[in-house]
Length: 340
Image 1: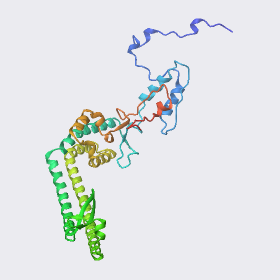
Image 2: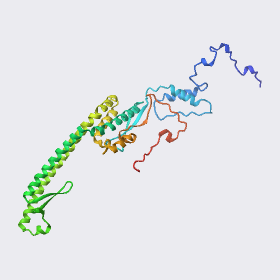
Image 3: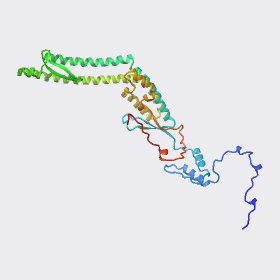
Image 4: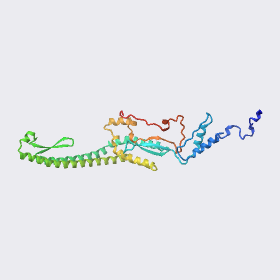
């Protein structure tokens, strides 16, 4: 065995032959020196069009594994995939099954902000509008028209009953009873039994006929009540459309290229009418408290829950030093509501 001299153990570099004065003038290397096979494996993995594959990098500390992986990932352009925002919105037909919206990166956060602005305006303007003189006058007119028709119909039955010496009395709200009269007072059980059989039969026959007319009148009143409710609902919808219609239309136009968002906004438009009471308070004190606590007052059913948000459509690079199940996939947070 022959010992090698020192000059054979290294190759000297002539500095004056280098085309730069300091390393500050050099561009950083795009590759890791001496890791050709590893780099080829990473390039192969990034070109894989299918899911379910992973790259496992192993080696001693300081080899540059993380640096190499991040460098390739940051410069890799995936033309087949884009990042998205994922949002939960209320499902008004099935509240226990929220709907999931997939939106271009950044749009989920924008939608959340737009809905919060809309609700902030409606929380203030809806109570003011529905407490205005013009709305209350129209609503009161509908109520009075319905009440008058109801009173007139009952008055007809009561007049017919009076001619038969029978009284129409109110027992409970919405409940009525026909009673045979003894002068100005109702017949007692004793006084009724004291009548002749012919008189009792006449009263019973009159009451049976009057009960049929009363049932007919009550059916009419039920139809009128539904008609009144429909007219009041139409008035509410017309009034609410004047407040929120143009604002929702603007959002529909803004998100017209996102059909799922447009469908959701139209569902919000309808749900606002069906759940108008959410925005209304019984008195000024409650309204003042609700307005002061606007963050709690904000109708929860109309808020957007942004699960994943991105700033751009590019696929993000996420570094997780502690890849536990919860850190990778998240977990469900429970909110206590009224003690449950």
